[in-house]
Image (tube, rainbow, N blue to C red):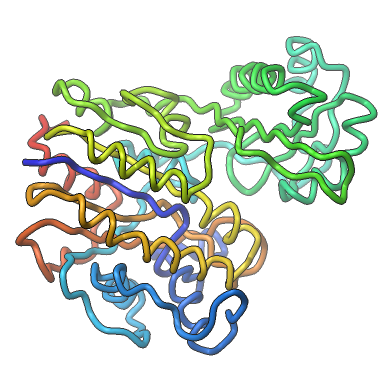
Length: 393
């Protein structure tokens, strides 16, 4: 037994889930849509031609895509990896729900989502938030895209000092404020209070969205985002790793996703490219039986939500080029699994996540070309659990 590395490429779905119709997501296919757009010459910005991801291809990404949809894309089959396609059983199509199910908590009830009305948040909770956070008012109070609402209300925020609040199709309250004018610590404290208040409505998470800039033409969100999420109500794979006396390293937003429970050490607050470097450093120092759990969020935040097909393709190709370095530091006994948490088809209508199945790509010495078929999200964690010889939950 060696180390386990579990990597989530945030939003890289491989085709609509069986219940996609319940989410108005029939026909969504994040990876397939990107690959097809590249082959058709519709993603030739900063790159050119067919999607070039030979290392993901060798792990079985195209085989997984075909297993999920029955559609064949121009490629070859898996040659060194084993693969599967996972279907989510939890209700929802957001990052925390996907991650929680991957490591052992299936939420069949779901979380509360806000209706598309203005104002969107209930007066009672907003009054409580203003009083407890000592804020005189809020701007926005509607469904919105994060970048758009900052452009719309950012200057008013600077003038009034009122934070900007908004939501999306997910179960979330997002609060944006200027990192210097409003203050980062004050924003975090406001979000912490909001999480306590909205938890009573079964709202899954509150996100602090700090930004900088002086006007609508140069506002930009910083890397100091922080999520306030209640941890899963059951022990997860992460908890069991620590109980076994080993370490669980969180790379990216993993610690936030699990309410900082079950995480021995966390590295976050930087670009995906830098996080990849940090992940390599952690893998190099980790011991047998440790879990390195990474989330690379920019596929989702920078390209999926922005419906940027060429950008998503460039990000995939850039990630793929870095995989040989990862492969080179793996020991013969290590276990690598690459997957996703939901979809975010950049060719689909709207700007929300899409309800999709996800690829499960496995690299382990002497494990080649094995198809695990159609599995559940929870089976992903079970595969890691079995490899680490952990006590079954």
